Image 1: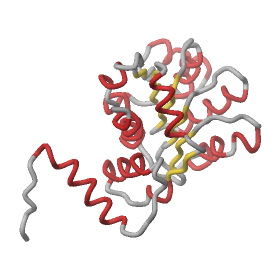
Image 2 (image 1 turned 90 degrees about the vertical axis):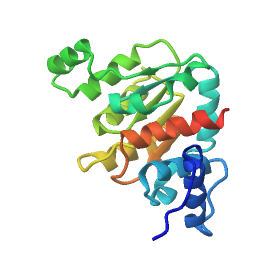
Image 3 (image 1 turned 30 degrees about the vertical axis):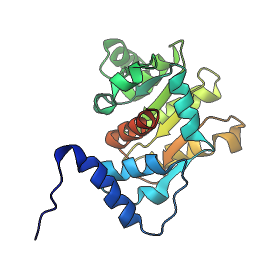
Length: 213
């Protein structure tokens, strides 16, 4: 087998060219295409071309939130590590993950909840615009839904891509049906089904940031 000769700085560009080729005649919404392709690039999973669901103009609204200084809250330190914090800082935002905080652990123990739930409660106390990037814990997405319904938080964008088998699909459907069932409109990018992960959450955040250059 002959290896393709690609310079290190051109590997990502070539990867995206291959993704476009392999998508073939499949048509992606131009507004969402780069987010979808970066999720595929991160996972080598072309199912994201069908399973990533976007509320109207979610990508544009997410980028506008970042331009206005919104910060990002993740449910894992892995997700936090994967987000390009230098690019976000150019607009005044930062990335938070509260999962390892002592007060979050104490709150979770006291209330008999997961740390992911307690971390969403802590995020609700922040007095700033927030984008939520949930890639691991469906309990974080469920608690975020509850906080929205209680009027305690109004996310500028929800990236909901928790992975797994227990309450994963249900947690995503809560966000997908938020406007229909509760009359509350929150922009979202959701990975339908069981697939997702902290790497996908970070990739979607970076897809927004890279489009803004």
